[in-house]
Every structure is written in structure tokens, then in C-alpha cells.
Amino acid sequence: MDSSIISGLIGGAVSVVLCTYISKSVRKSQAVGELQFGTFLIVLAWCCLAFVGLAVWAFFNDADAWEKPSELYSIIGLFVGFGIASVYCFGEYFKVRGRFDEKGIDFTSPWTGKKSESWEDLESIKFNSQANWYVLHFKSGEKIRLSSLLSGHGEVLELLESKGYNF
Image 1 (spheres, rainbow, N blue to C red):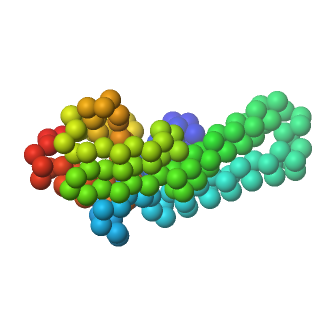
Image 2: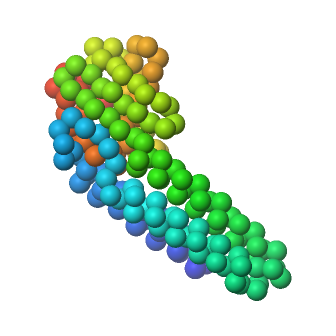
């Protein structure tokens, strides 16, 4: 088997194990009623930014990048891919916030804006296993997506279970 396939399989397995562990450890929030991302996401953002720096360094210091087009395309791909991932992770860490109580939820995201909904208006809860988040559908048509990596998501789920919602 090709070494790149083995590396990809190992990376995928480590990713699944790591995300499962983190999801279970952040189920409860340090502050009751609050939702926010923990240190894992900011560490991931800085690691992605470091890979961007590595790609920039390679672009200017690796002579092969200027001789072989495949090397140049790889470096540009690393720069763009990890750059987008870094911006996304920083955005999630610093801008995603939520508060909830017995009455409802207030949730803010840089991607969908601010949303305030009452639990009485909640129509359904679905788990998206591909994105590893819970989608809360409300009567207003709004959707709130709670990532399993979001600290305090388990408390929201426990509250909704106590209110009789099944998911």
C-alpha cells in the first residue's frame, strides 16, 4: 500500500479519536448556561497558521518550488487550504457564543449572525453525523447548529431531553 494512503488513514483515525475525546470532555460548560469553544480550537487555529508560515517559507526558500510546477502548486495549495482553515478556526473561537436557560437560547455566529429563540418554538432536533453537530429547527425557520466541540452542548441536550424532546 502507498505510504500516502497509510498516512491518510492514520491521520483520519487520529482525527476521529481526538474529536470524540474532545466532544465528551467539553459536554459540560465551565460556566452554566454558556456555550463557547475551548482551547482545542485556538490551538488548531495556531497550528494551521504555522503551516501557512511553513508554506510561505518554502515558497521563498525552496529552489524546487521555482523549477517544478508541481512543487509550486503544492505550496500554494497548502497556503490556501491552511489559510482558510486558520481563518475559520479563529472566527469560530472568537465569534461563536451562546447563552441558554429554561426559556430559550441566544446564539451568535460570524456565519449566520445573532439568533434568539424560545424552547417553546423548537420544532425538531437532528444530529448531523458528517458535520458532528446538532441542528435545532425552530418555527421561525431559523436553525441553530450546536457543534459537538462546543463547550456546554451537553447541557443544552440534557435540558431539551428534560423538556421531552427526542433526538
